[in-house]
Amino acid sequence: MSGRPSSIARLAAILDTGGEPDRTLGEAAHALRDATGAERIEIWRQEVASPGFYLVSAPAADGPELVASLDLVPAGGARALLRPGGGDAVGMLRLVGDTPPEFETAAHLLSIYLAGVRIGESRDAESAEQDRAVDEARQFTSLIIDSLPVGLYVVDRDYRIQIWNRKRETGTQGLSRGQVVGRTVFEVLTRQSESKLREEFDAIFETGELRQSDMQVETPDGPRTYRLTRVPMRLGGDTITHVMTIGEDVSEWREVQGRILQSEKLAALGQLAAGIMHEINNPLATIAACVAAGEGRLSDVAGPGIGPLREYLAIIDKEVQRCTNIVDGLLDFSRPKAREKAVAQLNEIVEEALGLLRHHKRFKQIALHRQLAPDLPPVVVNREQIIQVLMALTINSIDAMESGGHLTVRTMIGRRRLDEVVVEVEDTGPGIPGPVQSKIFEPFFTTKAPGRGTGLGLSICYGIVEEHRGRIEVESQVGRGSTFRVHLPIDFDAMMADMAGAGA
Ligand SMILES: Nc1ncnc2c1ncn2[C@@H]1O[C@H](COP(=O)(O)OP(=O)(O)OP(=O)(O)O)[C@@H](O)[C@H]1O
Ligand SMILES: [Mg+2]
Image 1: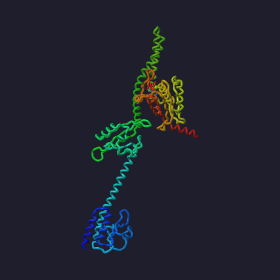
Image 2 (image 1 turned 90 degrees about the vertical axis):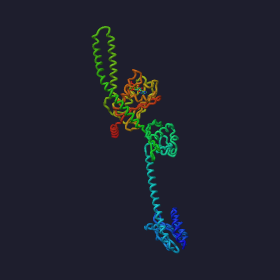
Image 3 (image 1 turned 90 degrees about the horizontal axis):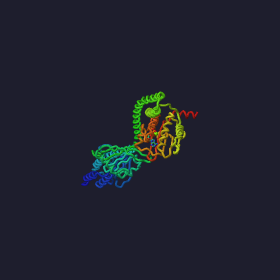
Image 4 (image 1 turned 45 degrees about the vertical axis):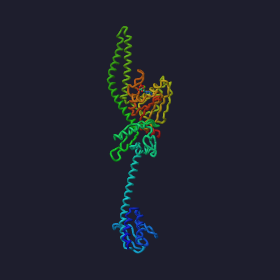
């Protein structure tokens, strides 16, 4: 049989083609049948994922094509188990018809082939597992990026956006990922100038340095400050391939920072003032005493000069009194006396202050609006001092509205903090320009004509409110008016006692 050795050679050639295994095995069965003239050749293969064997090839199939074990393969014919490396059977070769001598050799070749296929398949499974792990890691990373409470986006060297996180999608501009990924940053961030943006990114691509800047953004809820951090990224190699931009809302932090700065400045000023005032108090007291003594001696002096002399002494006395008032005011600012405090209702204090002002001559030109929140929790204050604060604020507002306007006094629970009550004095005056706003709480800062204001009013208010563990703020727009806001801590003990009393 000349065809016989060549049948093995052909089988080997087919198995060597490296095609899809089941197809290759199908072809092998065909070739074997042709070469051996067998009635039927079956190759059974073990399934990879589940137990059992299936029929890969059987020209003119009959009987089951899937069996749980090789014992269940239909009876009859010659069989050879396919056991790669002599291990467990992973398949079977079955031949119906005359068994040719190369039957065992064919089975051996098939075993070797299946061993190779199985190694390949397990490698595939391994790399699929690896792919899955990489996928999971990727998902986890994007989850982290999306959970960040900051806006984040990444551009490549062509300024094209590659990553755009959830916070960016919900931010002020609210553009979805689908709308921006792949487009250039200039097409997307149209509110910023293209040349400036390009410059900023180029600087990082060139220098490889991280850059930080603050940006003011107008939003429907007022201006907000964002801190932008641009971080150079290198994706393999030394050159910078991407720049990540992180935008963090730092408005609150900025505000607090500003307040701390101001209170530090005022505290330093207060110390200075207290020192000077202490030194001035003594000479003032001496002058006042001398004036009193001089007045007492006036009767001893006779002659025409006595009239003017009496007048001079009166002037000195008046001016000394003025100085004393200023010194007292300044001391109130620098070291407000911790006067006795008692539980009080803010609305009552407001009414009292407004009552005292009723007789102010310019009050008549002004429309007064009261918006006092009912049922406010109580505060612990020195009544006189808070009245003094409210009067100073109200008089400032009246001064600011020389030709009339609206004055609104409001009380409420703190908007941002629920543990304080707030009283607001709002006017429709000319407003206070930004740069001036940071100075108005300083002692002696005044824009009023000499003799009309000492510039101590707001600084005293500041000292008093601080001493009450509260804070005073201004919000003003030029041309629109000003609002001064005094925050005072709620006295929860008194509130509880109140509630208990009401319940009893
Ligand atoms: N409601 C307001 N509208 C516009 N500007 C104001 C207002 N309140 C205060 N200011 C500005 O702040 C400055 C300081 O106010 P502050 O009360 O400390 O001093 P003053 O009113 O000038 O003098 P004083 O209160 O000692 O008589 C004012 O001179 C004014 O420029
Ligand atoms: Mg004033």
